[in-house]
Amino acid sequence: MMREITHGDICAAARVLMARPRDSWPRVMAALLAHAHCADCYRKRCGKVHPQLGNGTLMAAALACHPVACPRPSDRAYLDAIGAAIGAVLDWRAGRRRPVLRVLDRRINGAQARKRDI
Image (cartoon, rainbow, N blue to C red; front, side, top):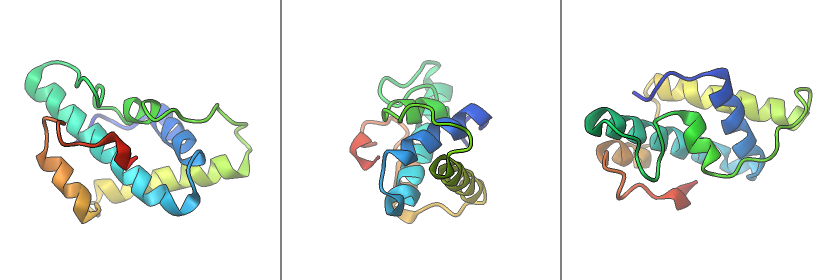
């Protein structure tokens, strides 16, 4: 499991979603979560931050994807993106991951984890 999810992680992921078409949000979130998980496994095993995937937080994975600037908290699109990010985290925690991204769980070294999936 990746590192604990914080409010900042959710906000950073939502800002990444806002830069993408809505129909891609589930795929983008699944990739962000998988990358954070792989990076955390690498960090635990090797004792250092993964060179491409970061420190194992959702925020590190999101910030690597150049999120949009922080919008107003009342922005409807931002609230929708926060809802989508929370839903994806809940699905991830419940084990409802996309099958193709389960492969990334096995590729802990990160060499095969592709940033272009995001």
